[in-house]
Length: 398
Image (cartoon, rainbow, N blue to C red; front, side, top):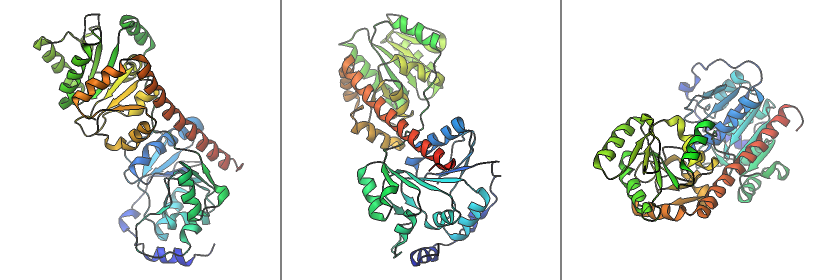
């Protein structure tokens, strides 16, 4: 396709960044899927997609993102190429992807035009609205329509997003409302014999879990526990500090204060009937505690910088979630959970105690947990649909 006036004007405004032309790692042998996440909020669902492509299909993946941190087996992590013709050609000459999947709606006209010229199928997933890579006060006649028209499919998060893509010029038949893909959440493992033994020990005893608590939140958690004990005298708190090294001094301080009956997991002490607080310290056991506790408070959200653990970890394992106002990088996830009435937000230590007392009612905790699980499972179904579309295109069936 001839270069349009809009693309010509766009390319004239893009300067080549020589720093981006440095040596790239070797291309994996065989077929290669290219996934691109334009921002932090989209990295997690794209990593979930990458993981499944590697594990289920045995396909190597190139994942580009502005900050592509965090290694994944079978996945090459790179910064995306600058959006100009020379860098686009160099990037595609080196990686030669068989298919390209872009998330969100950010348009990179130079790269996408070059990919389309090479007949590389392109998909847009988790689409919210089409926007150009750079906010520029310039006129690119017909460019958005031209670029959107080169996509094999656009999978929008909702009907409003679908309308935005159609208005931008995407083909009506190319746009479909599929919903959001799942976050990158692995179902945390558990030693079943350990879970069964603790479950028998706790029997019908009410339990809640304070997960990844930062030191500045410990007093609030203890205050909430004390308040809830007034109405549920057999209540057990499982408290996991954010830093494992904090567990032993915390257990010692609580025991010496004489206000609590404390057991320390690292000392092989069991949560016997008289124990009020079990101090845990092993991050490998988060899956165990989420399974045993019907209610979880996510540490870091009350006075930290955001949750120290992903909210989806608790959601997929059926524990009702309480959290403070500090949502950090997980803000969009909490927004989705909140919209589904799948969490209980609190603003203070006093609120935490009141919310805990309310959620000790099994039916209320179960409603939150079910709603959170639905959010997580819906995202997994969308990822399944994206995978099926990728497979069909790569097999020449779509």
